[in-house]
Amino acid sequence: MTKGKKIISYTFLSIVSLLSIFPLYWMVIAATNKSVDVSRGTMLPGMELINNFKNLVASQNVLNAMTNSFKYAIAMTVLSLAICSLAGYGFEIFHDRGKDMVMSVILLAMMVPFAATMIPLYQLFSKAHLLNSTAGFILPMISTPFLIMLFRQSARSFPHDIIEAARMDGLNEFQIFYKMFFPTMRSTYAAAMTITFMNAWNSYLWPKVIMSDTKSATMPMLVANLTEGYVTDYGMLMLSVVFCTIPTIVIFFLLQKSFAEGITGAVK
Image (cartoon, rainbow, N blue to C red; front, side, top):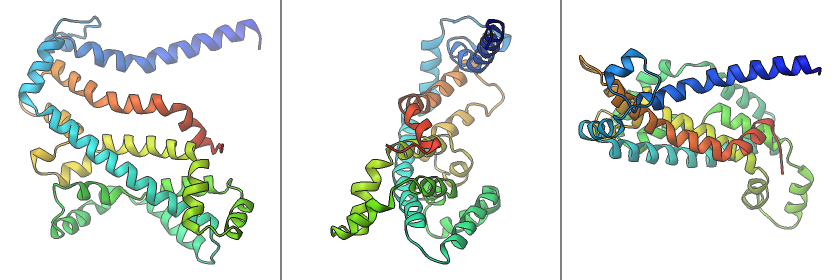
């Protein structure tokens, strides 16, 4: 690549990077300003961060919403990884005539929008008395076709000779899975954990339907509540968005290397 092309490429990438970072910058800046200043489009930090925080805490139960979001997201992530990894491993390792047909049916479920099944699910969970509960939040999303497919693709790179040798040494299938497959697929688990945690944390539609009690509200529901009414305090709203964004940013940056390796199917 010539020097001129490098300059053009780096200039273009710099502009795209700035455009990508700008919403985050504006979000943080808006959290430090008054609602009037945010409406005017100010781009400089203000002195209202503490006041916005006091108003937010006084008007909304932030600690309760944050605790609920962490509780639901962690429970859903742990159970989803356990179930989907076992399913993906089984679909690839064990041979059966009907497994490909079953996998095709599971993948077809990806084409069904969640809104189409939301009302029947609500009626089912209402009759099962699972409204405003952790189980009601995680059960519809605990097993996803995408995660099963992700673990199945990773299992294809797992050496089958090792499995046969382990079986000859007397290990059962669960021991092979937890002692050999699980440590080898750490990058895949990191990628799946990042995706699942972010989806659970940012989930809004299903919690809004099934969590009718304010004590069960999550952070996305709290942010949505701040936009209701005749007047919206944009400074306080942006501060709540900052609080809602921080956990997903931290998780992604901590696991970004493993996330990239897991998505590309790398095995260590």
